[in-house]
Image: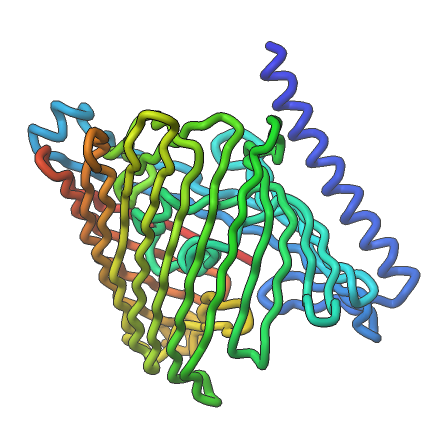
Length: 407
């Protein structure tokens, strides 16, 4: 009962904060003649653009049907068809008087309120660029840092099981001549509410990206990147696990709890865009430094991705951030104009190896085919077929669909 009350209080608090923020914004607009406009979302800004605020959110509704062979059924039970609200988020972000920015985002999917980016930043600092403090993603992996609104498939590849994702910390980031970006930060492991306790328990993560080839029109792009993270929890243990690239499935691979003083993650990345065609790949190596008497463990994961727009669009790459942005169809879906929007086909092979010496976490391989229909910059429908093959066990087939709206 106490836990349930606490969850309800969190939701109420988030709602109150959100309402007050909106009320304050409206009041400010009335007194200071803020301009309200739509640019893939609701935006408010003063005429001198010193204050800019954006209201946004996303809805992702998933459906899946699954089948498995007898060996997978014996190991994990019968995989169940299902549906879920994968993400349901709302956020307020902006820039206050040029040099201070912020974001407060909440996710209500699954019936629980979770933080998804709550931070304050100081921008335009000479030589450093920007300092951000709060709950945010650590700078690791091209695919992990690309928003779920903009990833090519419904789920990220298997290797994101290594990625640290969101934690509380201090991040310094900058870019040079729109061609090179870097970010480095110190973080503390926390839960979904940004709470973390324990002596020590600080992690170091950094990422460097470069764009050695970038045409003026952005039609040709080569992206190179390298991420590194050193993890040293106060509790000397780690656990890596992952499900196939379908969120409604159980976890097929799992190392269990491993005693280790620290972990080092290294992840090179590459992407190439040539008009409507793109290729993307990443590799992550995870090395665990043992406690006394234990041997060192090494794990790895990688993927290869290719996509092609049948309607001539291309993936939207932002070199100053070293990640992909949203797709802008050449023509939005319109029945009267006989316009279909944008259509993309994609393929990905993904592999995750969680076995080494005495650790038998399993080896998982996914083949995924994707079809994306972008009705406009704010809505798309996705279809994925996933063939998940677990070494020495069996295989499963998953067909899934997503309805997505974001602004």
